[in-house]
Length: 137
Image (cartoon, rainbow, N blue to C red; front, top):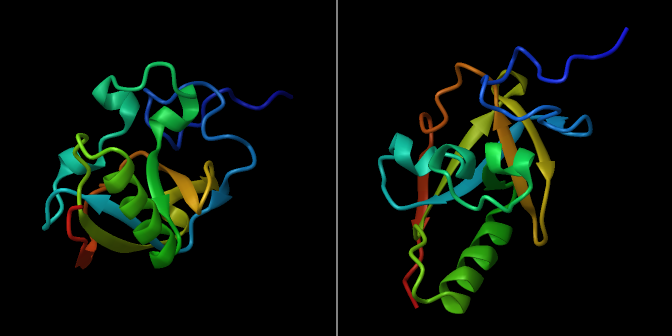
């Protein structure tokens, strides 16, 4: 018996075979940088939902960029703010405790970058706590 190409646990707009089979159940703290606090839904839209980065990996475009370490997100955000001064990145770091009922994650980049694929029905922007704001460079 073959496995389904798209799990019923995820939104219908996720691409086939997404998240990948080696993605792990979410448990623990994740961090994300955002423009607004309290968090708003627009800060938690995937590239797929926004129609951005069309040449990116299709499955990764369906998830959200998150980090599991405060140091990793600080370093990544500082790098982005310095390397791309004309691009607007949210300078506020927020965190949320996730459980296995929230979806799956996988490391998908360097320096601790992970992608979070939230299950259908998870309100992605809720339950985040403010951590800090980094000064713009």
